[in-house]
Amino acid sequence: MLAKYVGLPAVGPPPILGVMRRLFLNPLFASEADSPARACDHPGCVAGGEFRAPKSRLELHDYYWFCLEHVRAYNSAWNYYAGMSDNEIEAEIRHDTVWQRPSWRLGDRYGPGYAARIRDYFDMFSGGAAGPRDRHRRNDNRAREAAERALSAREQALAVFEIEPPFTPVRLKARYKVLVKLHHPDAHGGDKLAEERLKIVNQAYATLKASYFG
Image (cartoon, rainbow, N blue to C red; front, side, top):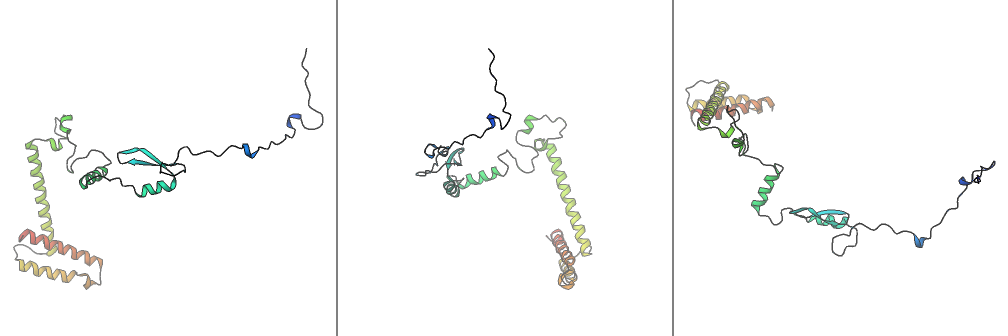
């Protein structure tokens, strides 16, 4: 037996598109608002605990959960260094300056244990692991470079003072007074260039005193 099909009406909207009656829910049976997932951990507080705060310096990944009011109070009273001595606080701060990473003394090219891990047959990366002969050679080079810098500074100072040794401290001071009077900013209306020249004169005077009469 064939099923009976109902065709679409010739006039008017299809039955399935007719106006449906609106259902009104009784307020007594309406669902309540979602309760907070957790309560505030502050004693006596019934608000929701939506904001987390670490329990202590040693438990940074273990949290209390507070409402906004109590998390603000907790954070304002938080002291990360509570219970630490001054030396421990200083060590912790120094450790934080290098992002808790290992470090070594300034001037050493590599950290401790480098020589034990690397075989440097050509002494290219020896750093602090070189032998006594290499260290002596580097020390000689540093001393020679320091002497060259001192000689260069002395020659520049002589050029600034336009004076040739030998000279006495009295003659050096007299020349210094002449240059100060010549280049003092007050004599040039506060000119910045004169101020810089006076600084050079002062530095040259200190260099010559230390080199010849120090």
